[in-house]
Length: 422
Image: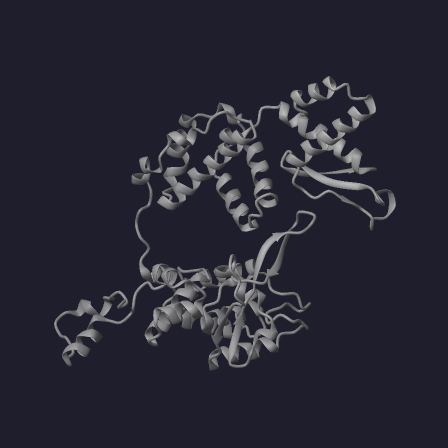
């Protein structure tokens, strides 16, 4: 709405009617721009009745609604009516969450992955809370949902904190936009509920594929030499690349002795708001400081996989592509790997397990922490904290190296592992 003080000021200055209308139009346009973060465009390439008209879209009942008008001024007038009507209604948590998602994507330039994670967590919230007026929700309501619905699923402490953080973000956004007056999550501490979470740590062997499992997966993939998903799996075993990096690899990245990893495929939306996959010229660790990626030495096994990929049917600049030449989507590869592992009855089902296993392999070959971080594309401290799980050397091997004798009498040492020497 136009601020009353601004309107009174205009009237007090004795502004002429035509000039006043123009100023009101400008104020309405500014109001729309503050509330509407989607693209507004003229359909110059359209045919039929849409030719040269102006369009955008809004969200109504969780669905996109296209708005088309003859002129830009008429479109802004319709948007003004839409948002001013919305402001008159009490905002539910769902209403505010949808606006917050739009704000994150268009005003804060957050990634689609971030918004998808928000969606996943928001969908866990009960319909009773989601459809309740934001201003009427109390900390007791939120606590009740945590105790009755969320905590019985045994979330990790991290999941608990992130769920509470999402609540807090929604209320903070509501306060900034004058939809509510308080953020009830400030009265709730995650520490109150940690004792009800799953605080067990994953065993190291659950974080990575074992050598036996890798051999099992490798044998299974080699039966599908014409399947790009299988070849991506084989290359991940040999290079420890991220899923998005595998999907974005192009033939020009094969430098002979090295594989140049300097882009990734990410998931976003096209200009019409539909899900789309596209490449960006940086890897995950380079998002804020691109430096032309990293080089991974091409081993003989790695070369075999790249040669098999050259024989894939279809013409494409991408190493892994379908018969039409389109690059394999990152999510398609992830899903294929998950199904393969479940079919082979392997507990670890994610590409990250190959990265951790590849790091362990480099440990066995004597690579330093810095060298391993360089090949995997991490900061050294990140690699040590999250990838260097354990050195799989047996205590019996260490005993023999230290004493020159093979230990006897303790059969349990064969299954023991020690932390990598720092």
